[in-house]
Image (cartoon, rainbow, N blue to C red; front, side, top):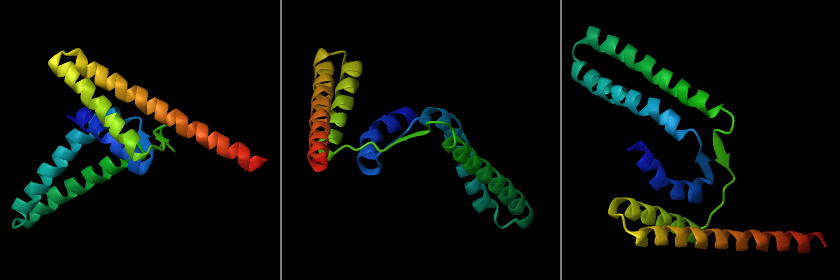
Length: 146
């Protein structure tokens, strides 16, 4: 489920935040189960809040677990190449990435080549648009130097 969420949010993340988390799969293998435990423990803490001794114990465990989870995430950020940043795409390119994702999903689920053609067409148009923009930037940089 976390892979699907990452794939579907990637175009939006690239468009708004101009970065891509490289180790998302590795971190999600730890973060998703631990955050589920945190959520259940928080509900238990709310239910057990009238019993001060038990609530204090659950609260301490919850505090330690959240600290560990935050520390883990911070350590993942320190890995080499943890985030690819500086990726700039426009709205049209983001839509083209969604078309590519939808085409691949359709191809995989329905076993119909039309989905693959949509995906490849979206990807081709994406790369053509990105190349044109990069060429325009290069031309602008050359004229600014002269």
